[in-house]
Image (cartoon, rainbow, N blue to C red):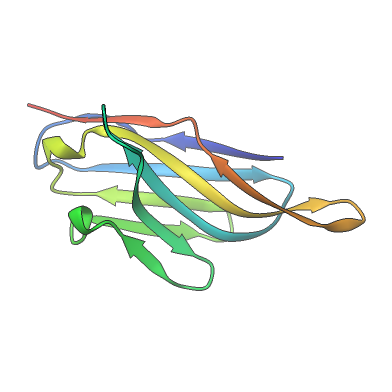
Length: 124
């Protein structure tokens, strides 16, 4: 009922920049939060950055000051601007959607949806 389309991953040299995009579509009633998580090889998935519709923004300590998350509420999109990339930022990055979908005559349904993931490789 909610689809996420991610774009923007790839290979970048240390110190470089990348911008990730994620568009949510479908029968969306409301969005509570959209954000980005990442999973490096052999590690657990971790929060990178998240922005709630209530206005709060959270960043992982390791990316603070280098990454910026932003949202386009009109088009249901979330972006992650990544600067000063380091080899340890190498991971698969996942877009996450939390919100509600229309449910006919019933109350809206709460959903959590993940994107398929984007590989970001930081290497010289």
